[in-house]
Image 1 (cartoon, rainbow, N blue to C red):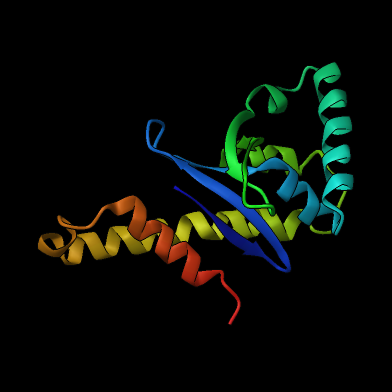
Image 2 (spheres, rainbow, N blue to C red):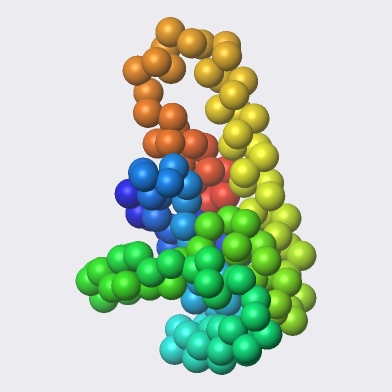
Length: 149
């Protein structure tokens, strides 16, 4: 399952991997938000140069990235560099940006609040939640919490 979440004015594509049971986020979308770059191609070029520099430094950030198919603005699905939350948080530290701290806090809040809400609700209503797919519920919680009104 893939969808969009919003950080400030930037769409960030993500996909849930059922096998690994975790979300993966588009690296270029994160770079675009960090650099406040409206032009997707410039953000992509920035990521390519950053990835090259990180590889030379021996950083595991690039190694931990994967390529999964995500839907692009043209509606087609393309292989895209994606990373899990832990890798994204490490990547953010590699980009000099005034948005680094806000995006790290955003990711942390998304995870903490969604997990607490899920835990509280599943403990409070166990019979009801045995019929609900928890990952889809978590997705709804995150989507509603971080979608601007």
